[in-house]
Picture 1 (tube, helix red, strand yellow):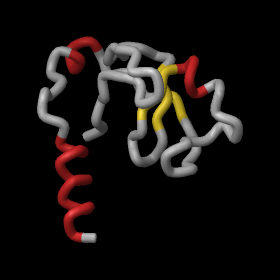
Picture 2 (picture 1 turned 120 degrees about the vertical axis):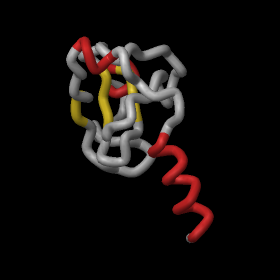
Picture 3 (picture 1 turned 60 degrees about the horizontal axis):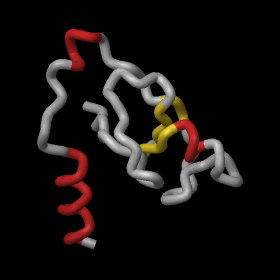
Length: 82
């Protein structure tokens, strides 16, 4: 399941799950529209991947956003094994 991060990785602005102007890359790096517009190549400054608008969950699914970030846990495990 796609991780819906709650803040921009550049400016720290809070991002709502229903915000339709949030950009992500394939590694789920998350950026507000204002910051994404400033990236010179139009790509993710972390990994170089292309940025796409993050899909918006239906209202009933927005109510169930886990507080634990499963993707972050996977990243931690992968970093430890590298």
